[in-house]
Image (cartoon, rainbow over the protein chains, first blue to last red):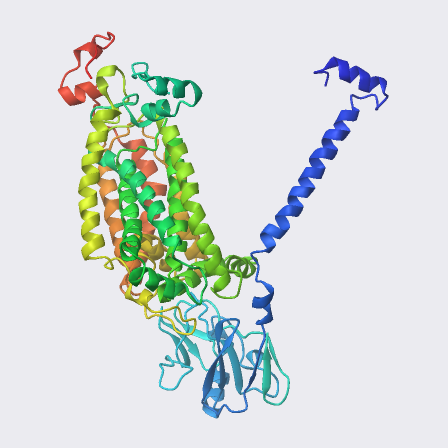
Length: 191
Length: 430
């Protein structure tokens, strides 16, 4: 502690504790803390600026009307710049989805888990394959719906069933069901 | 730094003397790549690729700065701006084709430079730091190239960005927020394009900085050589200039002929036609693949189609892909055999060529459709890749009894080295 005996002696005489604590230690700690907290505070805006900006977030919820979708039909909408599939299931598709035992599923979920009460035939999912983010086929008429009659991802061959659940191929999870709610009998607000 | 017999820089004119006392820049160049840097006399053409990589870095920076003068990183105009460069800007087509093919050539020479390092074990003591810095440069190059490929905002740009940033989404807990943060949105868009442009401009200068450290670290032990025997005496070396400036100049001429053939006659051969379709978030190309130089690592990523040791397949693929490069960081400690050169290690040499075949297979598989038999082959090739580094290399470095090494570089070249054998100070030979 006594690298400079002169100041040390002066500090000691000034009476800053007996065990070698000097006034200068306080200044050092205060200065480094001040600079450290200042540096960390500067880091926050530098990191935060990379997060989605206000205009991107403003587009983060989408409203659409499911009333015009006939059973067996699906529409593609855009939600957060990504495709969104809204599909009204036919009676046969509903039966198919409910007939599967949960034990046979990679990502066990019932159709009821994936739809809203009272609207069990409206399936809203992201049109984004959970493997590597391709857009699966099957929402438009005439497209390949895969072996389970739902969606089929052409990139790496993932097959989804009528409830949008992964049944075969490399995708790890079911097609994501975004947060949404029915704001009237037919209109949904996604996000 | 350098050997005692290295020539000393002597400023001859008044101006250079004045400068040498104030900012000895010519002295620095003289000692780094001039007559002041003694280099083993037996370097073969595999030692050309460091200088060639430096050339392509400079070419990329020059053409890139020019392209940036005519480009705009706004998602609504980026695609049109690239066509504007191709059609309207004077010599714009030349700049863009030079930049696109320059990236491919940069990777070709870097891969040869790395494989040279594998064969001659250039990573061994005392050159570990050169190797580690080299791996850092390679990682920076991959990041730069990936972000550069997004800028034309074609279909492959968009879907490549989506798949690669999606890799971060596989990380447990923080993955999705991290991906959104990296992109500045929920899918690649304006925010992502702008930050990629900014970083694509910045990173080459970071690479140039690490290259300076790489060369600095190289000049402490001096260059390695094909025998793997360290320099012992002056007769083992020749000055870098004019001997290797001439040899590197010849190699550069050959590579530039090949580069000109690609740039002028086959400019899109290594690209993907899909990237001439503007980015469309609602339509996926039939086959999403990265640029050819990422194929081996993409093959490793896609090899994991099954959960492995409680880790989900997708995350495992991501871990394996990053590990396949990060494993190079511990290479100096995996191969501890004191003999460097593959020329004197018959067993090591066999496995080196098997590794090369394995990597060639991974190159092919990374560009193939993800279907059988390619998936199974990717799994086998990936398994062998890690087996080579983690098991085979440490074992052969222990059990192999290398061949008798030449006494010195001079003996390897001339067949005899009486001066050195008699342990006398060497006479001038250069």
